[in-house]
Length: 322
Figure 1: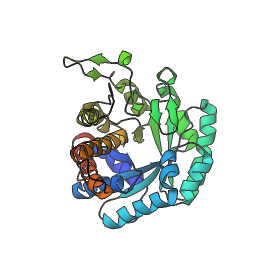
Figure 2 (figure 1 turned 135 degrees about the horizontal axis):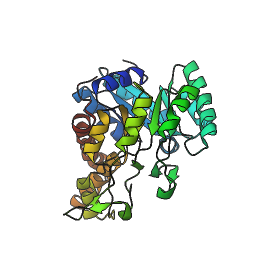
Figure 3 (figure 1 turned 90 degrees about the horizontal axis):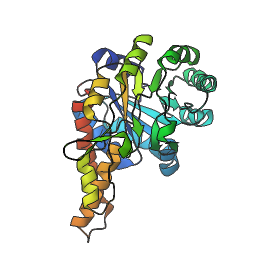
Figure 4 (figure 1 turned 180 degrees about the horizontal axis):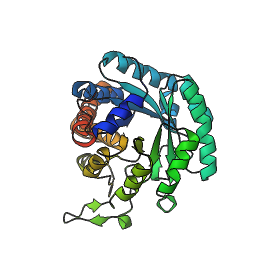
């Protein structure tokens, strides 16, 4: 099937009590690992491209990689989404360039300005058959060009969501309930330590999510900053020359709880990067004489595939839903 929008994906996810995985892609191996897992598990998927990914890999190369995945995985729905579009011009470029979904992130702007910018993108996107994700509330952390200090983060205000959605016409809404961008999502001061000395992040604000759901019944909600930062890959990186102390993510059981509610899309980024980096670091320690990228990227791709498979089955609940 050709690339699709997220409209039908989200309707089925909302009614079915699961979420669609939105995975950030930067190169061929990541695209292959994600889509091969989704094809085998018969799961719908959103492949996301950020402003930073477009600068790194080039818009055309990324689109063609995703188009190749569509050809190789014809039995699953795949959406191509712009993650954290910073302005109208970037969103327009992606809409004109083959994307089926875009996010306009004007969450750092005042409420009225966020509405104005978002509405402009929505009008253009809808005229071209493309859907729009918007954001209300501000997540802490770092993801490509998105950099927000923890003290500047703000939870989404439930009393604002109805007006925002009505005035913008957006198709889905990213909210802030305590998730955070990057692999270092929380400071040690924000966390507690369990009996093993591992940092435990503060719980997500499900009360905020519940109130938003009441105010926007049937409307798809999105969670950004939702990588779980798998500790096995953090340990693999650190055991092979890396230095990632106290990297901690969102507990998977909390993401599964969110996926059973109005959350229809969960963004996963850092987990894939950790799997790739950890695998490559370990490979070079075991094979210091190897130099062929095909040798070390093959196991990295395999580990990405298995990580995505786990997410589809155990976290998102979307395996078998294509």
